[in-house]
Amino acid sequence: MIEGVVVKQLNGHADERGCLTEIMRSDDDVFVKFGQIYVSMNYPGVIRAWHYHKKQDDFWAVVKGMVKAVLFDGREGSPTFGKVQEVFMGEQNPVLLKIPVGVMHGYKTTGMEPSYLLNLPTEAYDPANPDEYRLPYNTDEIPYDWDIQFK
Image (tube, rainbow, N blue to C red):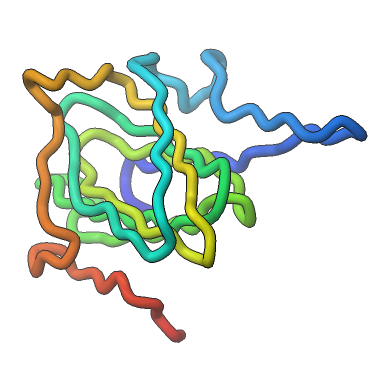
């Protein structure tokens, strides 16, 4: 696990009407502060990577479909510097993923249907001064292969 990353298991409450799943509450240990909430719809096989933030933590939950979230710790001085972490998340594994400031991250939609990724960052997006620092998904600076790995 990369230093500062948190994976919180989500639990649904089901009855004959359907299901309710709490993603995050202001009294959760993982809660920092509210910036905004948005959802990204992603087609199967699409890779959205790599980027990191200097000011905000991201909190991801996949509410439809599945994604492979990948994190890379490029933070100098971090005890997990240089480590890669995968988190498979979505309908088959409902979790909330905290991605701390400075951790490079991205994801790929897996399976045969689009994914819907909910993000609850701690800061609102500022188009005049975006807190996004990017590398291409296939950069040599991160030791990761997005293809399916047969282990």
